[in-house]
Image (cartoon, rainbow, N blue to C red; front, side):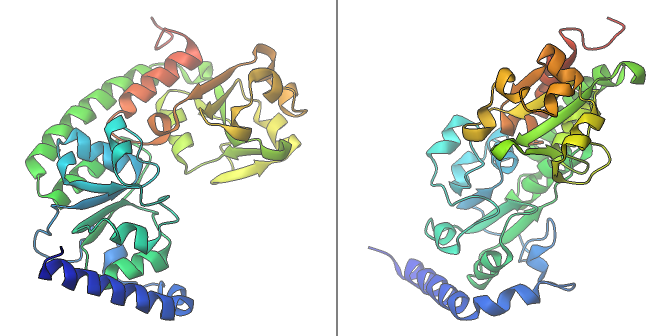
Length: 316
């Protein structure tokens, strides 16, 4: 039987969901400059330390950080990208981070929500605000500073700043060592890497600048073969040939993403690239490769070794 507090909370949720149903057509235009402060990075709804005894974590790296901090007992839900560590998969799944449904989040009765920047959609976040649940958005940048700042921001929201600082310093030291190995390789010896997100329908969807893939390629001491286009783009055959990739990088995924080297390099444009000559295809776990969380130093070393062999730089 629910106590009075639970009933009162449930009613607030029901009111919030009802408001959403009535106002959904009018929500999106309100997210302009001067949007509600709960959407601004790393800002909680309340000034005092929020109640984080029952947390929903949105974003694979955010969930990893909470586990790395030893604060996993707070978690009552996670999004579908939160698949590491394995224990996280046993938590209720509230949906994909960019397609959250308010009812899925509210169903686990959270007292706080911590989400990586870019989670949404905005109208779903607006409903969570109406439910008076403290919410913080953690900034996302694809570099060393972004990772350690993410750790500190999560720790501050959970009220464990000292533990977060200890973890941040450890991760930062490991990242610096991994990056130093990669940086030692001369620019003229760096290979061109083409990250392919999908080849569905024979169309190559690749990663340009400002993406997690571009960030990890650079940290691993290689060159993003599509360094002139922003975001993820469907490439023309001419663009693929001009990119001249030495290596193709993909995530370990199913469906159209699971093409083997023979199938992949049979695509007309890819067949004319340097990568096709050696069937140079690297596959890695997506969250490990692109998560930019506590394990990223290991991903840098693994990718560097896969591209160049066991030697981490040309001088070894």
